Length: 221
Image (spheres, rainbow, N blue to C red):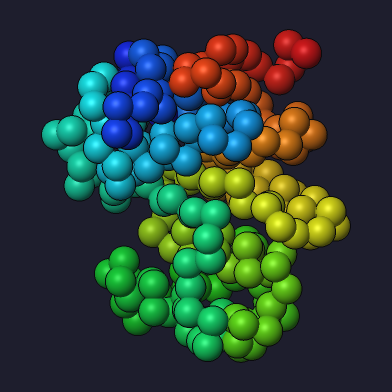
């Protein structure tokens, strides 16, 4: 298992966001978390990435405890938020070089990794163009490429197709499938589009009313 969550609780200002939530995610799969806006999907991702503190419950990520193994969890995880997380006045290459350096990559390792993620996200045509000139879909792909620089075992994608056209959306979904197949990492994908989840994911869970109300394999439907 890549993720095991037991009895997770989280409140904001006395309002329950997540209540006794339980969830298990198999390794090397694409796992889809479906739910309406405001259901708590982003809160859950923030907790799994130690950006938000849980109130109670137990979480293990690749057998690392969320509370006591934060450094190890950070080293194998990458969280790609809904917002763009790059510098618009830098080129795609310059952004990747900057963030790769932050991850501690150097010289040839850095170069090799930059071109690896450029290929993975089909950014070859945009390598030396400034990010502010990109379409919404290409900006999303740059976001994903940056998230792959640390060679994560688990990649969290928070509604990465919001605000882009249907053609770009399909292109991104195919890239995510390719990343899962070629790199074998676990992908935790949140969306409120059922068609995306059905096309992309091996397993699905629905988050509503603060809990996981169903979890099942796509193949069973």
